[in-house]
Length: 562
Image (tube, rainbow, N blue to C red):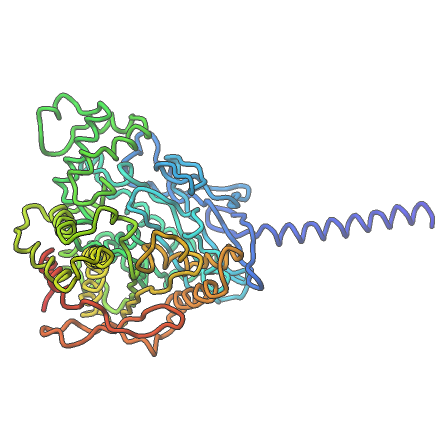
């Protein structure tokens, strides 16, 4: 072969190699063109299901300096080169925990998006969208946590999945002034994400008119708030369906009145040496600009630790978090249940999916000190009086009798189990059923599930004696047994696929023909509520303790028509 031919052959080989490499790069790094410029993502697959991920997309200005405690400012960047959306960004400020391996920062307002590889490849075909607001008591976690990721759902269900960070704790929910520190900032962050989805999701092959707004735990509480916001916030066209997992904001433990919120923030300011001389003499009312300005300059980690002080938490109705959504404000004008009553028309005909765990509360209460009936009474008394200040003893006695009247006083295991049943009903089961029934007055497409499947791997945990725990459902629904395949059994993966299919069908608008919708509440309560117990196999069952839920509604003054 001549030197010329060798050179030509080498050149041709190099050209082929270059083209092959270029094609592979394009396959490895999908690029989407948006109104801001191009965004470069990454890819992955589960078995035969391929997906593309766009991670760490900014949706608001970094809330630093004078923007701390302020409403999020929409971001309108102009990218001249592709934005690298290939890694998760920092989580919002929170306490570090050994099993959350990510960095934290105040610069945390980023969203993550997953889509099937085929999305946007067919002209005119737009996929339904799933937006998840993560949970954990308004104080921790992020969109980067595996159980909150949407990769498996997008890949296996042919939908687009989105999640995001939002500001947490005092930085996200402390209220000090209607103008300079309005509170509910974490909720405002999620509203910006919903508007980002409306304005940009078409670029990714998503349908802005088919958005399922979903939340788990605190995220679910936020979903119920967003569902009935005042009309001036124009949120109703931002979502078409709702999923609420283990959390509704209708009881006194999930939101603070503005006066309570101000007391908490005042004490917080005292602990970080920010309370102005004026505010020291003014024991009520909004905080001065001087105090708020100092809080904006305070070290974020000092604020983080101060918010967990026992005396700050003691001002509220819950034992795990100080700063909650605040009502009596521009965003949440009245107690959330009153807002639901006033604005029930706003959710008219929106399909909804409610869900709870069989045993929501074991991980939140200590059962080691409970062995006698007297222990149980003190347990109930402590929980109810924490939620409702000044409650009369006869009310406490009524609930004690209901849950413990048929208990063997010598059986400590049975006593503990009844304590868990009581707390499940008080915090999760009854509030969720009550709100589902209330909304069913205007929406005929409302379904309710009880997760009853204890994963075969999870069952080895000694801390779950009574069944599924808080947050088991989202782990299965978003495909954790498929994501970390080797860590789970075949039955776990089978149930995970069942749960993902259920979510996928709901997001896509598939009718649940074998699963009755929640019926409108009847005055004499003769209509049994049929819910789906998710297990292997799933089955329709009658909701346990329907009647006591009405008594809980009366106790918390839910004002449900009967």
